[in-house]
Image (cartoon, one colour):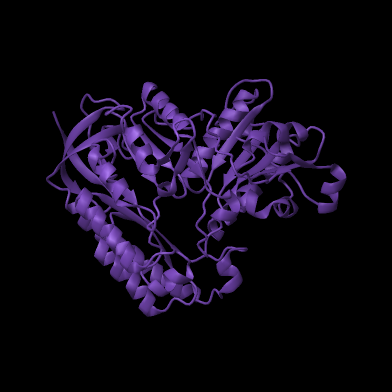
Length: 472
C-alpha cells in the first residue's frame, strides 16, 4: 500500500482549500459513491478498479448524483480543454454542496497528479485528491475526511498495477470490456504529461490478465481490449518459468482462451510495434485486424522536436508491414497534432501527405495545447497563432473524413462478421456492432441477441458507419 498523506485542518486553512466526493451504486453502510470518467480508455478502466476497491470496503454506488454521499471525477490532463471541462463541472456542484455540506467531492487521475495540492487551493469545493497510483488508499482517504478537512495521496508507484483487483464493469453493455495490461509510460514525448501523471512503465503479470479475460468470457463478454499507454512495450518477467513474456506472447495466450473471444488492443507506439506482433495477429482469427498507431506529425523536423524517436520513413515502413502482413482491410487509426511549436506550412503539408499515403480509417485530431511542466513547455515557445492552428486542424479533419469515406466505401459489397453489441443509437429496430477492422456496422434486427456473431453484407456507408443486411 502506498503512503497516505492527509492534511490537518490547520494545514488546509493555511492553504485555503476545499473538498470533493464520488459516483457509484448500492445500499451499503458507508454511503453511496458517484463516479464520472473523462479522457482516455485507461481512465474508464481505472474507474472500474476504483469501484471495486470502494465496494469491497463497504461503499455503495449510484448513477444518481443527487443521492451520492461522495462524488469522484476521474480526470484527464492531456489537453487544457480537458482540465477546463473539469473546472466547469466543479462549479456545477456548488448547489449540491450547499444542500449537503457533508458531501465529499474528490478529484482522481491525471489532473490530480499534475496539480496536487494546488488543485485544492484553486478549487475550494474539492475535499480529496488522489493520483492514479493511490486508488487502494481511497477508503482511508475518505475515512480521514471524517476528522480532517482535506485528504491527498499523489505518490507514484514503481510497481502498482492493480493486477489482483477484479474491476466492477460500469455502464457495461455486457459484451465488450477493457483490460489493463500495464501502467505508465517510459516515452518522454516533449508535449506529453503522461510520464509525469502516470509514472514509469510496469507490466501486469500475465496470469492475472488471463484470469480476468477468462472470467469475462465466462460472464458472457465476447470482446476484450488490452489497454496500455504503449502495449507493444509490455514485458513481464515470469521468474517461475524463467522467461520474459512479450506483448506478442501475451496476445497469443489471450487469443487461445477461446476462439469466440475477440481480442483488440490500444495503444501501439510506432517505434515498438514489430513484425512479431503483426504475424501473431495474422495467425489468429480472433485477434482483430485493427491497429491504433499515433503519428502525431508527418514532418521529420517536428517529430524530432516532439521526441517521438522515429522518422516519417520508419512510420511508413511500419504501415507497409501492416498492409503486407495483415492485408489492405486492416483498420488503422491515428492521433495527429496540428500547430506544434515552430510548425510551418511545409511541415503541415508533410502531415497531410502522410495521411494521403496511409489513408487512415479513423483518427483523433487536435491542435497543440501546451501542458505546463512538459519538456516542450520548458524548451519551446508555443508560437503558432490560434487561427493558424484551427485552419490546419480543419484541413487535417477534412482530409480524414475524405479518407474515412474511401475506406468505408471499400467495404460495400463485402460480407463481415459482426459482434452484436446492442441497439443502434438511432433506432431500436436496428442492431449495431463492430466488424473485425473496428468499423461500426448497423443492420435491421432479426432474431440475434447481444453477444452473438452474425454475418452481415455491407450495402452502403457513411464516413463513420457501415450499413448492411444480415445474411442467415
